Image 1 (cartoon, rainbow, N blue to C red):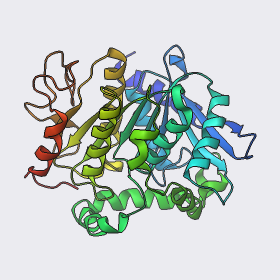
Image 2 (image 1 turned 90 degrees about the vertical axis):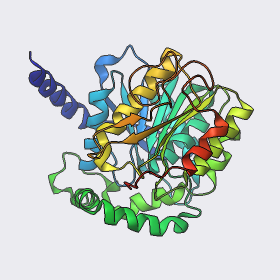
Image 3 (image 1 turned 180 degrees about the vertical axis):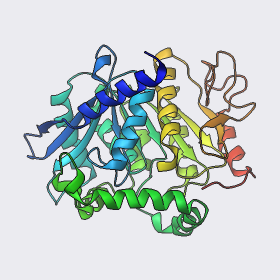
Length: 348
């Protein structure tokens, strides 16, 4: 088989797997969750649970586009969850605990956990609940909290102006998902208000508490853009540095200096970043901080020369040395100052 045939066969398998799901119930709350099991052929490898962003659950077109990118780049099983029925009166902690209980019934062993944007809040909330069963947490453009989002409203408008056509295309895809006629398995969560309600569940100052609430045995890698319109990169840097004070060598960060929120236009890049973060974790490579910048066509991100290129590094974003702040890498004290002094153009 040539490369095109292999890709076609892989996509055919993906389409078969994405139309099936398991339902697990938390016996305490009665909340039900769906779990889509992808890349099953890699069953000998530790799975990763992936939470997409707002409006892109696994039963939507946009959500499936994200998951196809992850399936192509990750040689490991993927568990893609979504809420099937959740009580209206709940909060972040109760929601995450309930979700973790249901997830443990689907896969009782250790897991990697990853989430993008709104899914990042779900990811680190569930990782807290999984405790020592969460091996490695990766957050990509994770929204910190709903608290204070109004402060970033003008930056969000700027992003719409700069990336308007891309954002509009994604919004049209999401809107199309609200019509169940073309779906192989329409769900009650197709209602856009249900998506909004589940996002509201994730409020409170959760990111600020994460250094104290994440299990000490869980490692964490955070990826954030300096110009992210939906959160403050300085909050992310602060959380990473505070956790490393409590648990040295447990947490790392990639700061994308010339970009904002890595949304639908960077699906493949997000998948590459996640694959690399998991590979570094399992290879024992660690570096506290590294910088990167996105290419003009958003096709990928490249390491900034002199950052994340120390001894023992590999190709790609932030592949770093085993030392906490080795040669070519950024020590924690340098991270905030370098990001603040960045004069690169904004892309988001």
